[in-house]
Image 1: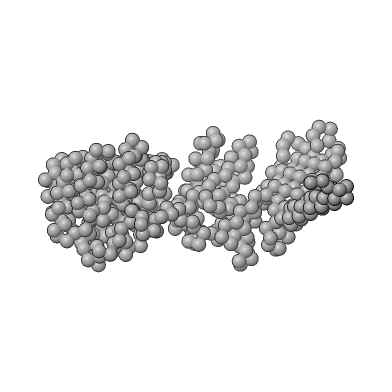
Image 2: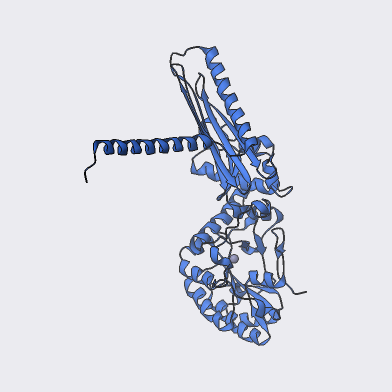
Length: 454
Ligand code: ZN
């Protein structure tokens, strides 16, 4: 097809007009959301970038803050006159996060007005779009719960220090993390958890820069107010087809026993147990050692997938009462990580090694503490019939039985006992199932030894 000259001109014009419209559209969109300021002359450079939130009150506040910073920078430069070395420089950027109805805006500016280094300034707005109020960290916590949050904060600070090879000094860290609002001005929630920024010089030297920690939500249960928590549940945990959960209705009128197995997993003996309990429609609880889960990962995975409860027995089986706080947290958290790496979920139940626990360690752990009220002493008996007899002797409704699935005799003794107990109208449930059937609301302060019926 041949176009006439006029045709070509018209086509070209159309293209130009469309192009111009696109440019205008892009620009207006940019202008409505993004504030982008560049000023540059022979003395100074200014670069400002931030987004409007769409909330008038908050945006005005931010605009005023930025303008004030810009003006005071220019004033200082004007007074100082020309500099022979570096140009004066001002850079401001922002990070926005919105979680639920809360807008978090963190403004970060660096001003160079001579001297050895930049002056950094942080400003955070935490704004509730619903109530139109500014919030502080305390507003997000269940009342009086900063004391519970503090050890977790410390744990993550020291972890950050280790990763980044920062030599943290305890005095300094303690001072900079005390609960005064100006120690916790800079924080936000996002999908990963609670993020806290400690500005340079707050808990570490200027040269070490900011220290930023992210505390995942699973650590914040019963600390953060319920409405701000994001539960990290497996998506299909609630679906009825999930093989991990079973209908508990049919166990309602039965006597209940929770068999618990410590110190594993162990590929051969744990597998034998998993095979054996199928005959009794049984589910059990494993308190596993973090140090073992990787080398016995397949059987752990199987145990979990077949609906048994996986709790932690810490990483190295040390007496928690003899460890420093940081070591206690390591023992617990490393095991949780190791378990999560295999089964995809963090455990929430803890059996302390030797059953040793106190109020202080409970405060650090933030887990459900499950001990036992039937001690089979299986590791001493080492005989399946004696272990069976011991279980039968002490069995009662709501009992939690202590065993170790690393021994063949313990596994076989359990299976022999199940055969007898089944005839006595017992059902074999996990600790979690027992909790549900008994309608207990667990907390982190109690040590549970059994769940007797009412
Ligand atoms: Zn143990």
